Image (cartoon, rainbow, N blue to C red; front, side):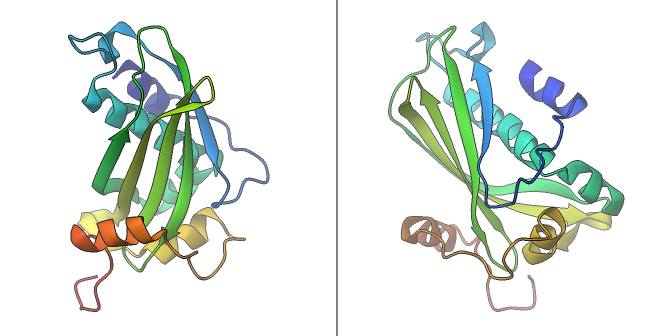
Length: 178
């Protein structure tokens, strides 16, 4: 929680020339509050760490100024995790966040935790943006704002991510309630 609060209050500076499809790397260290009673990172702490890394991704794109002007804010629609190796007290690790793609409604991100070059966990997040009065902001509008040089069309989502999005009903549907 301390890292999330710190990140929320003190944003990173934008990375010159970074595009929406470029990866963002967040370096962190495991603190005592991140551990469960088995002395490895608690599964819920991974989600909080992913929040920090997503904030950094937006900051790297100078996104907070852009979305703040419009009073837009991000929310998580769904997430899923796969764990491979434990992170323990004092471990330094990286979270690499990258945009996989988007549809009319949702933005899909991959967040990979690595320690000493080995993958420890991978998370996928389906996120949306809301505006004043909780109005849904179309994902292509967010992409266009964050990355003026972004492609007009989303890259194809990996098959497993597309299937996950459909299974959880977060993917765009051809209905009027986009």
